[in-house]
Length: 100
Image (cartoon, rainbow, N blue to C red; front, top):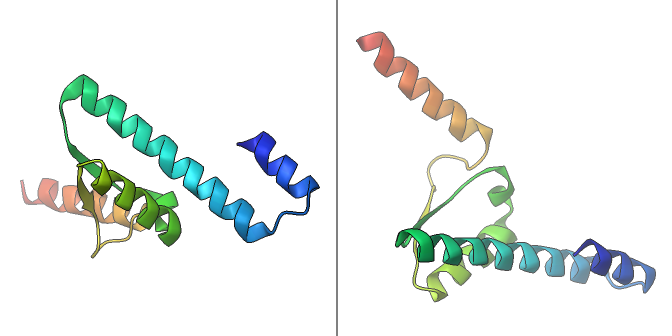
């Protein structure tokens, strides 16, 4: 992927096209990981989260690919996919521990 980006930059490919290629390649690689994991475990549910999934293009592309490949996709809507979501989870765990 890096070699292709360098090639495109040297050939004055539009930045938007380079970015789309990058994100599409990343989504395809993540799909491939999910397919491999499903083969090994039989699990068909994928949780899509994390800071890089705040990128709407990448998130939508990956979710669409997962759906096309018959995965059940979990995607957080009410809580951000980045560190603030992690912080909320940590606060929830702390609140439970304090109540004990």
